[in-house]
Image (cartoon, each protein chain N blue to C red):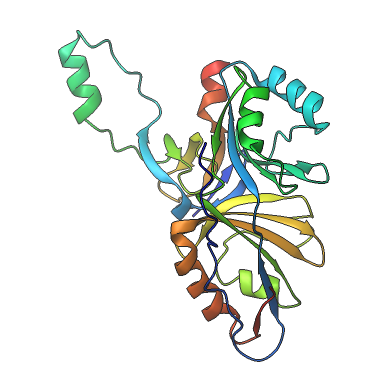
Length: 193
Length: 86
């Protein structure tokens, strides 16, 4: 099978403004897949995920993960899976492991991932996200599928620094950066790597 | 107006698309008159109503929302899938 050349989704990411309000870094080389439970296979799927990954499959909008693999709840019977240990053919293997229990679709080349942190991050996200992202309503581990400036995003809180990971269709990456630059310019946006 | 999605939590109505009256039952296809009524004739009720809403920009679930169409107060939202299964 042919390996395609890797092209960054967020090569246009650059620092803007003064200050370090928001620090953004592209997460590269991550295997990404959507997993949708087949009809009536929810319990068996949870058991298989437990067996293969030692992960308790989240039933709500939360993330659950091991060191390198995360299952993020994005809807009833739907998950976004990320894997950052560089295992070759991770998604292919995942599809085999969940054969008959879930539909697994490789999104590695279709979704761009950003890691966002910084002291002004919540204020900047509030300009685009109509969901309460503060600790009480949205503790670390929470996942939200929503939209920013009409662009569909999946975002999850990694820790209370706060650090967020955000997934966007890569065809929207340029428009998303435009929104991020415009929204974070006043506090300063730092492209970190 | 905000809709309390049973999966995602409270979300702005702009994330949803309205998908019709949830009190109707689809007639059998051979009953042409009943099908005509079902497809084309809409009631315009006052007060409490049940509607289908699709969470297009969120979890992609179909909801049955109980709503006061006069005041826009949203009383309840359940997953249509769960209700169909029960």
